[in-house]
Length: 197
Image (cartoon, rainbow, N blue to C red; front, side, top):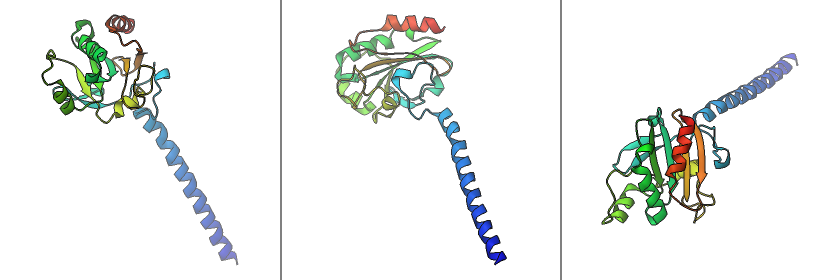
């Protein structure tokens, strides 16, 4: 009888130890995962948070990562792309403004298109060479930045509207703006950059 009781106690102790170790490993992993990538990024509370990382293809077919841009402030303009005339105006204005593209800052427009679709739709249009566009065809980066359900969005959940992020040279969001009026906001962006330099 004593051996059975000892065996039962050993089994219970082993079970409890396994559960405790499992909980410890599970809880121990969570902070490490969150520090690498936020599990949920809310536009309304984005300022002062680490911007979600990404790697996207640019208009020349190069892979551009947010991490690779560290050391510069980064302006991200999430928009509808070629189907939106105000978006193209702002996209173009951002690309060629030296105050927003220099050794301290770079500006990229993020569109939910593939590079192939962009080339197909833009064929015959007269765009200046040098546009700074990043392609997010599956919408994962736009979703990670919580841009698909804001007031400027025409088709909720499908693509961004007209939304800006200013990310500092350490990868921290310093300014956000969702522009329902879809204007050209270079002056406001320069003012925000001046606040963090």
